[in-house]
Length: 295
Image (cartoon, rainbow, N blue to C red; front, side, top):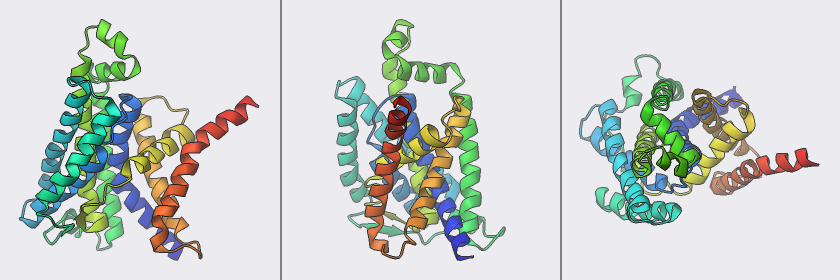
């Protein structure tokens, strides 16, 4: 029963981070844009959600508003990279650095904002009182809606233009696609999803918005993407299945972390060490597999 509870906890946490991983996948894999803005956007989403819920705003509406705020850093990074010709990774880093101060100012120089209002957890409490089950239910509903919406979006003319921009920007430009527009649009969309993920994490996982919650999250998101797309479901090429694979990667990654903490010699304070080791193994796995196939 104990291990079952650990598994349930890992699944619940993974679903909270699923939208974050999808946002990272859109930037790094679909658009081929190494965006570091996510670390600031996830915190921003958590802060906006926490403050709105504490002010009496409906928790679902709070997530939607957080998504709108998440659009802003995505647009800023896009403008820096496209119109000001700053290297993509540096543009994201600059926005991420600025977001730390902005987030801290929004929080009125507090490191933590606890959620004391009626969160989504309370909204689903009529179904079950178990917090983990509520997290799984809410996370699953949000993930399914998001995956279906994104699969439809990437099948539209604009979505196909985004995919063409990521695959071959020069060819896209010769096909009369405004690649500056597609870059900014995609970065705005992905950071909106990441902000929503931050709002979910604040409501279900942390129970608060924490200024440092986004630190190192991009690498974790990449590990979830590689785990889902490159290792477990690498034969699926359809965008719909890719998005599902990324979500499953986030869940599996969180379960691995949860079970790693059960190793007797490890303590809760070793979480960063465990995360670093797991990410390193996951990131290196595809190259090891490629070497093995070449032998």
